[in-house]
Image (cartoon, rainbow over all chains, first blue to last red; front, side, top):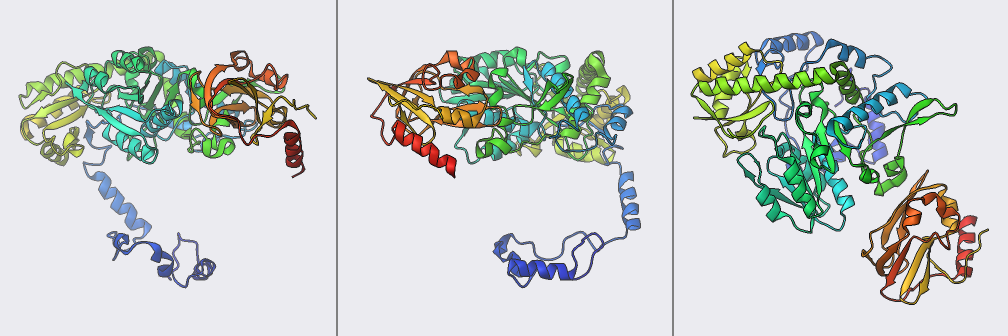
Length: 453
Length: 129
């Protein structure tokens, strides 16, 4: 701690003064409130400090490794999708006028950003078939959790929330975290042949249920019958909440709004945002106008300025924490501005036709992949009768994880072994085929399945 | 300064109630509306909802803030002033009369409320702070 580090600006004198101000004599004393059993002991396994040159060399070596995502042939989806992105999107997003992650508070100096957000909201609400969209959340999972909180505000006299078992397991984890101290009881609706069981939902519904959460296409790639599920929820005055992690599917599937959703959320990563290491992404959030005052997040609106010219500003701010304090509709009132902008530019470049064409390519390549993978005789479809978009589960004869490990050595990520989410599910492999996979890529995957599984 | 009718009883949160037999008519005071500014939205409960005295039964939103509305007395909502909810900006015109918020079927007698004189003194004190 006494060595001066080039990236740590505090000097030994600074530290001594800081410790004095805290009324302790050493860093060790400062940390003594942390229970001993959770303290890390010993050296971090990172090795000694390296020079910039050494680090560059090390990273270059790692990048040559076949498992580096851009070199690998990846069939991984499960909430994060490998879609194409025209170079212009990156170029425009990184322009100095736009390059901020922060929400624009001041309309007098951020008309460009605000207009982009307004366009973003317009496109998102059109895609979801909903009346109003906010300016975004962190990602699809936090959007869904915020939807649950909104349902609780609308139906505050009810305490039960039903969640389909086909919702992404990591989304469910985020949901549990958000709801942990709010007295909401979660109930899980079982599946029947890969999709939410309508009969089970009906029997689980009661007057006490504030909302029903369904994902479509669901975690296993299957398209849910949203319309029937929505009707069942409505019959018991429960809000119907839809989560759509693969939003490109909205190009070819009926919109959540048309199916009767009260709140519809999704992940905007599919709009050309790189998969990165799982973020940053952009959470989409839409609602019926009737509930707009219970909506969380930033909302951008169109208005006129003092000279009567069209202009944009944040609106309905009275829901937010700087005004409403502890009663705000969300205590995360910022948005994912830069990624929302990225998504807006991507959607604009795709246009209606491009967006649709991309979705059709996903559909047809996925059907081709199902066909060639089945022909290997090494796998079968787990849910053969269900409609899918660009993801499906295959059932191997042996461990899916073993196959994935062997394929990784050859520079191919064949999908996500479902044992990662359910230890008992050893043979299921979730495969995703986007427009970026060529026929050769898919044939190569089939060959690996033949050779290694 | 507005005139606070003697027929009403007042809360510290600036609601008023007029008791007519078993029914209480509830609104908010001219002082509260003056503080709020232009009212843009009212969120009121459905008929049949039950509330305890002091419980929040809805919200009133102005261009600058949102405030909770508190029940002066325990009761069940019998009627909501829908003429007002569809034109909430009107509330400033006659807040102690035709622009009431809800009618409540009383469950108990109003307690710990202020008379018009007490309320006038209360808001004068509040203004001096």
